[in-house]
Length: 277
Image (cartoon, rainbow, N blue to C red; front, side, top):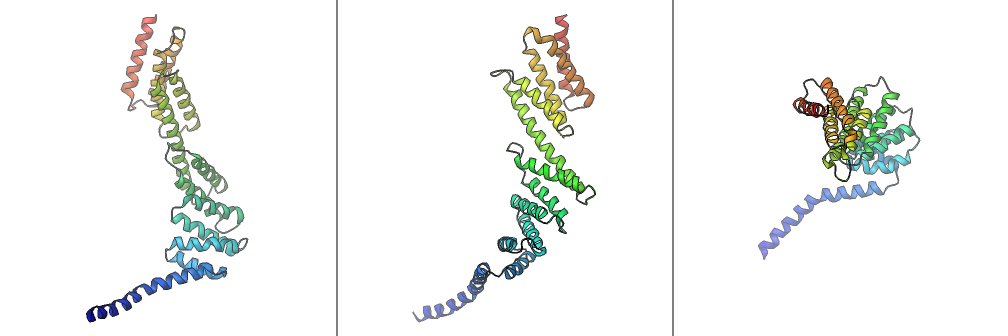
């Protein structure tokens, strides 16, 4: 028993020493959060930010920003909040904050960067192609406006790269839709026609997308399938359409990765035309 009392008497003080900083830290945090002194919160927020404690900085800045709204210090606090959220990858929250900055402080020294970061944050928040692309459209709008407003900006190249990437994503979404129609074939109607319309519209909307060859070969495949499933009265017209699609593909991609398939379809259609003569 004496031995246990001795150990207990030594362990308890050591535990108190170990947890004292934690208790002190928690107490300090509670004190800062509860204070109505905005300047004290702002000082701590900047300290936390510089220490890389972005979550703590954001938490305090949410209270600081309204207190300084409309002032030069308010613009700095708002930008710091946006940066804290961006670094934490809370991209949509960051984007909203950057937007508030350039709307509320259009002449602020960070107005140009805020516009760029707003679009960049939405770009990073943009989901993969199969999901809803509302954020992607918002990102394109923000980035396009940035280029229009700051044509000579140091961020222009990055902005253009992001715009091309987002347009490729939207084009890919349309490609997936066109492929789905193609795979449905003649199920409950002529889905090949829907595939053709979807692919044609995508090429008009995103003429420089990186999936162009996939669109062109899909158009050739779909027009071929539509032709061989057509009623007699539409055969000649649709055979000619396949031939046209073939020449569009080979002219665009004379050494394309689908060239053998295109040649095979062309040969097959020519044989059909020969039998019709």
